[in-house]
Length: 249
Image 1 (tube, rainbow, N blue to C red):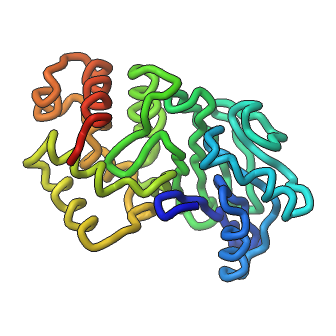
Image 2 (cartoon, helix red, strand yellow; image 1 turned 135 degrees about the vertical axis):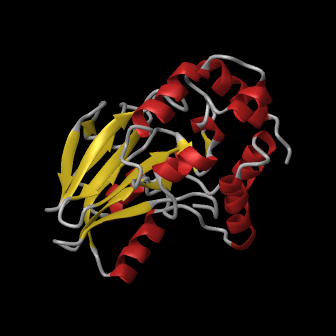
């Protein structure tokens, strides 16, 4: 991993065991697991097939002497054992319930994992390269309509207190773009201030927050519509992505 890439431990506190999400650097994952004093259960949740997310699967399985389960959205996922689709669900340990949300666009096998600790009432979502803080992934394998559905239907329908765990730390550049679209948005200004003094923003915000400062989830806001000069929500998100692709701020 480099400094902008994230992998995660998904810890079931009832059993003190953990699955891993996108373990691109397996040695680092094992190091953090040892520091946190949790036992890895050998399970991998892969958000999509790109190398910087799935490229550590083989080595992780080797280090674990065989992972028990490797979840992912297509056979492009290295060491895949469990191919999953939209609304599939399973458990991690005793208390962690996982629901899979198909979010094709960045890649056609993109899966976001909505997780709930049923004993503690806590919930989060691992979004890979579909959703970033105040941004979204490029439409490498999909359409604007697909990304609109992924962000504003699939993820947008989650409980507003769902904590977001994103694939990369791109927040500073993302929020600069959002500010260029909505310069008077106070939530965007507040996020910019956080980025001025913090290099890590994953796990600090929620789906409810994204609806306040992520222009890709604010497609009907008058300021956003005016900035892009489009009418339909699909056209707005298409224009936003094209503008972001060439943004230099």
